[in-house]
Length: 112
Length: 114
Image (cartoon, rainbow over all chains, first blue to last red; front, side, top):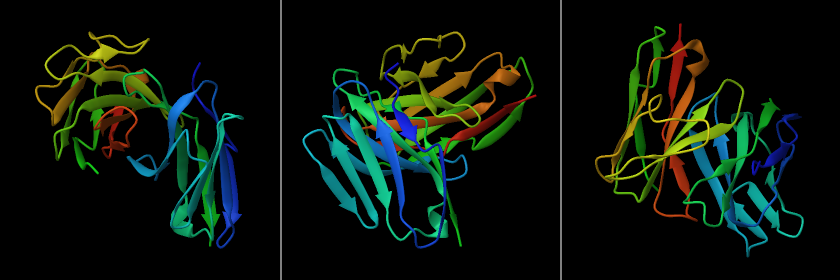
């Protein structure tokens, strides 16, 4: 299966702490995207990082990509209770007609 | 970014019936997709909705069960046919302006089959 693997499956932290989630994949990608999902609702796009990029930032979010290890990480700094959600990575492989393959997700709980 | 309106947002249906889910994008998009998210699981792609032609289905999904229409570049429908409790899931519509671009999602349709 091409599906990415994420870890941890669940993460519980206190407000103000940092949260790190990891995503691994098996074959070469054009880009990798991170999404947030609140309580089984729609997905919100967070960051897209291309295979020739190593790091991207957006506000309190930092995404890294290591193509040699076929892995990516999402760091949320100074977490807030509102960050409580499920986070998914999605890989965009070459020549797949635009299909995204989603990882299993990390369920983040930020306690006030 | 695209804004996607999906409806209904939720429904409870009797087994054996069918439900059609609508997806409207606020701008013309090249690609539209339908995903299923079973309880506590990740997203699985059902099919790519092709404008003016038959949808392209992923392994395990068939047109008779999940007929899809895409009459233009902003609208698509997914029908879940002859429903059973195993079809209880969240169904999500997604759009992209092309491969290797950001994908955007509707708010999902939470379907419960009783």
